[in-house]
Amino acid sequence: MGTIALAIKLEDPGPVLFTQKRLGQNKQYFKLHKFRSMKMSTPHDVPTHMLDNPDQYITKIRKFIRAHSLDELPQIWDIFIGDSGIIGTTKKNLDFTRVSLA
Image 1 (spheres, rainbow, N blue to C red):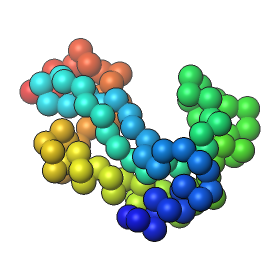
Image 2 (image 1 turned 90 degrees about the vertical axis):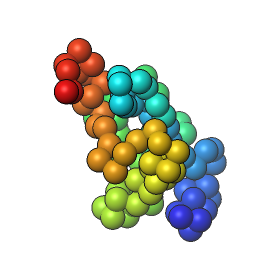
Image 3 (image 1 turned 180 degrees about the horizontal axis):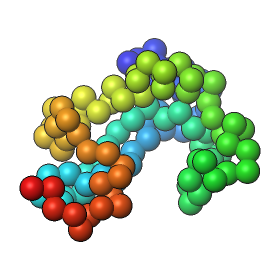
Image 4 (image 1 turned 180 degrees about the vertical axis):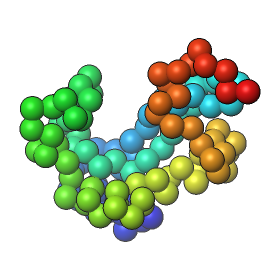
């Protein structure tokens, strides 16, 4: 994990981790952690697929860490502290907060 963090830091200054608000157990929000694969200059108010030229915001290491799901490694901490489970939530859960998961 240290090698990935160093590669991200060397390529683009800023935090190594990306956090995202997710819906967890009992409809409580928590922060999900991932290795950052986008540059810090990426607009935060526009989804990546809606950017004019999204390739200009993607880091060089992104293809490798995403292809091998290494960007997900920091989620081990989320599991360890009890915010997430082995079978975690998905981004879609934020869109369906009124749906009962029982």
